[in-house]
Amino acid sequence: MRPVLKRNKDENRNGYKGKLLPELHPKEPAAEAYRLLRSNLRYMSVDNPPRSFLVTSAMPGEGKSLTAANLAISMALVGSKTLLLDGDLRIPSVHEVFGVDNRFGFTTKVLEGGSWANIVTKVEIENLDICTSGPLPPNPAELLGARRTHNALREASADYAQVIIDGPPVLGVSESLSLAKMVDGVILVVRAKKTSHIAAVEAKERLEQVGARILGVVLGDTDIKNSVYYGY
Ligand SMILES: Nc1ncnc2c1ncn2[C@@H]1O[C@H](COP(=O)(O)OP(=O)(O)OP(=O)(O)O)[C@@H](O)[C@H]1O
Ligand SMILES: [Mg+2]
Picture 1: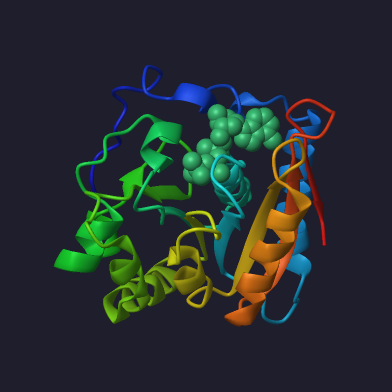
Picture 2: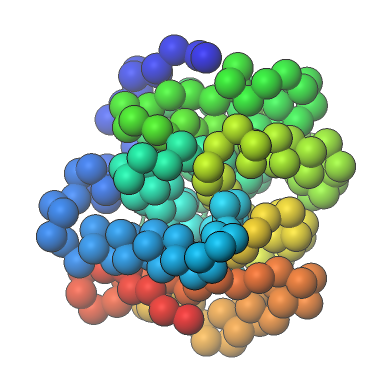
């Protein structure tokens, strides 16, 4: 296991500071919404609950990374061994969300093999490991569509109770569609003041065309500041 990385903690966290679950007051609507999302996912299918999730959205900047991080934290906080994995190999964010460096990560695991335990970073939340993107490849679509990636994700599901992938957007690039086929379900983030209705519907249709199972939609940035609502 790599050591806990604490450097860069605040200087590198850009827009995420103060928005992660442990920093939110438990009674804040956003904190309650993440807990509700977690428990809805857990009880969605009692005998066979989904364990691997892709968090995506139609367009860039809609809150995928923030949602993926908070969903992963909410699962870890109830004792579920959880991996948050950065699957955005163009503009990765997991290292920024947690203020850690990104010299190795998901691409290292896929290209060089080895165990997840040697790649992940422990953060200060019990039961949560994170895996940053690693060095960005010239061909993210090819890499994420590869059999080795699929195998790596299968291994992650064996090592962790829950795997959350912070994905790229659906429209414009193909990687989320590849990843969607490798997970148990997809969480689609829609940002109320940003996402156009047409883009959201188009993203949903493209995901369904590849056979993805959309488990829920997270509506963020509604009029209540910082809130996230769950529904389907
Ligand atoms: N519901 C929300 N309320 C307030 N701020 C939000 C919300 N969702 C996201 N943000 C802020 O918007 C910015 C972009 O969010 P984030 O990085 O999570 O989006 P993204 O969809 O992952 O973007 P990208 O496509 O670039 O990966 C961040 O600064 C984040 O803190
Ligand atoms: Mg992101």
